[in-house]
Amino acid sequence: YTKTNNVTVANPASLTFPAPAIRDVDLNTQACVIGAGITGTRYVPTSFAVTVTNARTGCSATLPNALIYNPVDTTCRSLPVITAPAVLPAASICAPYSQQITAAGGTGVPPGSYTFTASGLPSGLTISASGLISGTPTLSASGPGTPSVAIPVTITVTDPNAQSGTRTYSLILNDPGAPLSVSGNANQTINVGTTSNVPADTISATGGTGTINWTSVSAPVPATGAITVTPTTGAGTNISVSALVPPGVYTVSVTATDTPTCGTFKHTATIPVTVTVIP
Image (tube, rainbow, N blue to C red; front, side, top):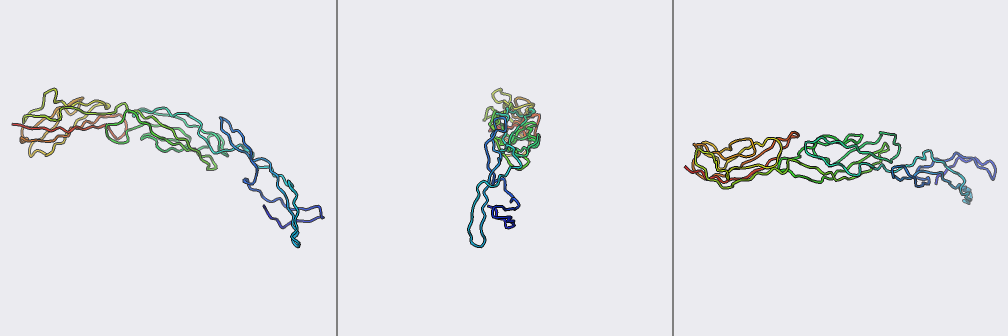
């Protein structure tokens, strides 16, 4: 209802007045199809009644459907909808990835005018404003890793009128180097000044990518000398006791770390070994 007071009464049957402004939300709508299976609504011509009121007596009369307003914009519109892909292709750690996201619907949308954002993408992947997911997935933290994991990724598309739509995918992230694990004899007896050379005492690594590097930390720390691993690279290693290490019982943490071709973090795994050093 819009009230106007600047009405010119030409005669009892004729009124002249500026047509009041009508909001879009006051117009009728009908269902329509945008394309690609996307439905929406459009504004359609809408009739409005005119009511005249005698300011002195308060009497009124109404003429239904007196004015018909034609919408300025008859575009079929909806919230924007992400249309493709139906499923995000799987990604792999340290392998280049590329996938275009497309959308339909929205209002005021000339080609290329959507803006895309994403949440939940694995480390190393980003999405451009035009909807291209690209990059090289990397490990998000050091550790053994997981061979395959489903990651929820939510894509948001926004049209020029700030209307948004979302779609959540399950992105399978494969890790060819996972899991990195180490195994071996957890209780070893080694003479001072020697390296364990019994095959059963070899600490071995499986999984990982690239060269495996070995490190060790002993507790308590020997007063003199050191307990180390030999060799420091390769699929396996042995515990070596310096000639100056006092006899006793030590806990040695032996750690394997791989050398992936991408990212900051690496696969790593540790095994605790109780070492009894004898003269």
